[in-house]
Image 1 (tube, helix red, strand yellow):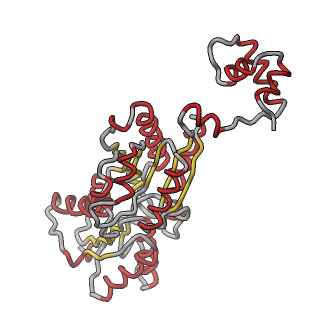
Image 2 (cartoon, helix red, strand yellow):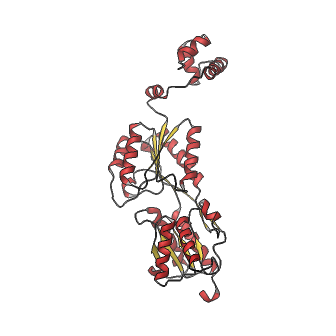
Length: 342
């Protein structure tokens, strides 16, 4: 392994000069810096990050915890975070909670054991008001950014999230403006704040349009295509035939669409369907879905900006939630209802 001593001998300078040149210290001339850096590359020098961490009391590591790599929402978020981290000289440790609290705690403990400089977390939402691992993170004053809205057990940390209520409100309003008044809603997991916010946006838009919020038009779903199928079958079995279906996310919307098509309904002639998220399958589904486009790449970039601010200023300077606007994307799954259906 090439050492600083080896570069110093080849360059004819002291080890201290090599160290300063590689750190871009100002008291080494540009010519000497250039010569030393070129030698370092030619000799295959790789900095010892552990030794650097001991000197600077930092590791240049960030921990990123997301639910699962298969969740399409997180692909561009992770890409943006990783790209920005690399530009800033940080390496990323990634773990997946699979939406299990015990796995979340285990991953976060591993991050703490690696002495990460900061944490970016999509929380595993549950109804408990407290969480031991989040209390430990706060006690250690680890810079932490939540990717999504906070829950009671992690409310002490700043978040970067979507304007969920407004985005869902705009989706419902779009259906109302098309002429729909019988709009079913397929809800998300009951413990997740974002699911509640999206449902509130739906209810708010109906109230503004003087449409009664009918509990018979609301069905518990979840987050997957299978959840959408089950909820839509329940809706049909209960004799509910809306002119439009609004789903908590795109996968649930696809499940609803698959069920309606299998039952002989035409989209959007018989029923309009709208999703949330704008994942790839929404655009390339057999009937391209109208949906809410979450600014996923932008969310990752803003999360890294917030993280760098925390690392520079300290955890005591926690900023409030950063909320990003999501836009409606109109495709072919929505149209005005048939005149007889109104």
